[in-house]
Amino acid sequence: MLKVKCSGLKTGLLQEELKRRWCFLYCRKIMYYRDVLLLLLVESVLTLIIVPLLLKRMLYIDDQRNKALSQD
Image 1 (tube, rainbow, N blue to C red):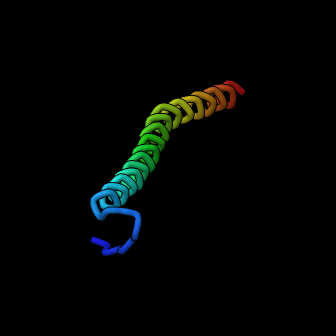
Image 2: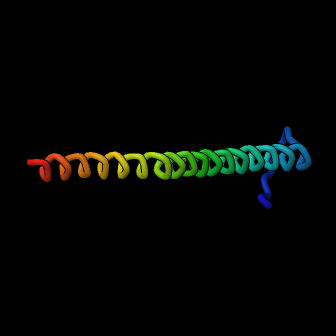
């Protein structure tokens, strides 16, 4: 740990403050990674839903175009 000499603080209070700050920073880092993972999860789910719908639509348009060309 850090060895700091302060006239007004006891080492126990200083250690508690350092521990509290470390826990705060650690929790912030966990929350950041949780947010990133949640964003990636939402993005991947949307991709899994939207891409097949777009492909289906594109194939439907292509099929309609082929039918129209074959009727001529």
